[in-house]
Amino acid sequence: MNSGAGAVFLFDVDNTLLDNDRFREDLRERLRAAHGERASARYWAIMDELWDALGYMDYLGALERLRLENRYDREIPVTANWLMDYPFADRLYRHALDAVNHAGQWGTPAILSDGDAIFQPRKILRSGLWEAFGGRVMIYVHKEKELKDVARRYPAAHYTLIDDKARILAAVKAAWGDRVTTVFPRQGHYAREEPPRDGAADRTIDAIGDLVGLDLSTPPRVCRRGR
Image 1 (cartoon, rainbow, N blue to C red):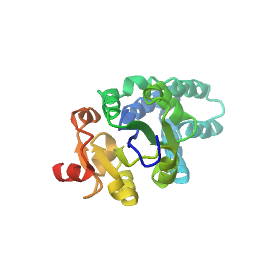
Image 2 (tube, rainbow, N blue to C red; image 1 turned 90 degrees about the vertical axis):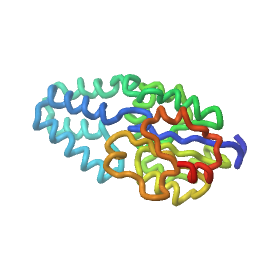
Image 3 (cartoon, one colour; image 1 turned 180 degrees about the vertical axis):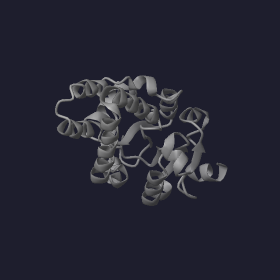
Image 4 (cartoon, helix red, strand yellow; image 1 turned 30 degrees about the vertical axis):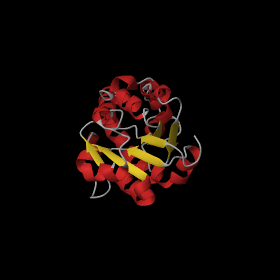
């Protein structure tokens, strides 16, 4: 794509295309069953510590920390394999892939995600999203701070961002203004706990599958008046 030409659709992954809340519940059950309540609680406490230090969920890093504290827990390697082999394809939201294909009629779909350098790519691969997006995958520590790199890698006249996190929508809208149309799918705990402020979301949909019913060729100014 030439600089300044065409449209790019940027899709978040967790709780936008994929039910990450369901995955976390499955992980909680696995930790309790395999390691006990105390170790499970400690795992999530470590996760909170790593979130504060790193700015993303480091599932494997937390497990490694737990291993250092529980050197003789023989189930930790089994849980590591459980994580790496988790069937993320079964956690795609209904019509998630249809939404990606629908957007592809008007521009280039790409993944724009936060996450670590190992597990997040594995999640995207295992879910089938890596293939569905033709390898157009961007994973940053803080994606809202990397918009220059996003624009360098996928230059476009206009962007559409589909993301369940209000703070991400607000940050990208503040940086790009009318250059971006923001779409807010009301899915997952972030969407329920923190709806976007006025102006952060140009369009709101109840589920990612609802994107299929939208005319994504509509100019952004019309989108905002018509939402």
